[in-house]
Length: 233
Ligand SMILES: [Zn+2]
Image (cartoon, rainbow, N blue to C red):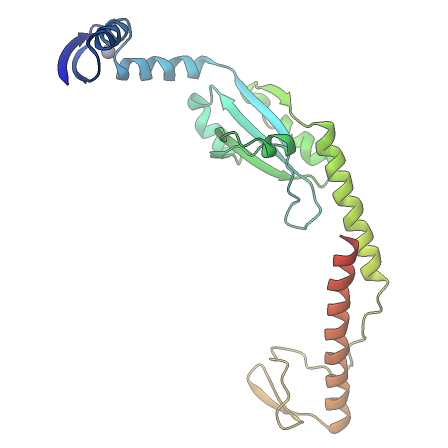
């Protein structure tokens, strides 16, 4: 190991420790002398990034949304976002990993970071409004929605619809009029005592039976719904 003083093209100099063969060190020293120092290099990179146009990439994500079937699309802002950071934040974007679309998820490439907004695609207006809102940033809009994303989504939606159709064909038990209203743990003590919102309520025999029958029927109904969803999936 030896230490060398290097003067960079920006005029700054620094001392670096180098290892390895003599001719490799010489090559490294020559290469570094032809570069700006690391802090000038970073500052120039920030400057040139800030001058780049903002790119808005729109993708359809392979995961369904919170409701299990609503498609989610992602707008990712990259490029010269730094000077417009506050504006971007106020539009609801958060800095983080950019999710890939279906094919990009399969390739294990590391995720790029950027300003991301995920929007549940309930109506086409939601999509259009989010893009219109970007107009002040004058972004280059890139449509990254691929035919297979749409195909996958349609398949998922069709599955969801047939699941819901199968579930709605199962008769739902009717809740008896005597069913407790309020906070109840679902338990009947001694065959007639229940606690609703912390207060003891005494049931007559017929009501207690009706409630138990309903609870049993409800449990069977829920089990049947789960089964039918699994069968259709
Ligand atoms: Zn410098």
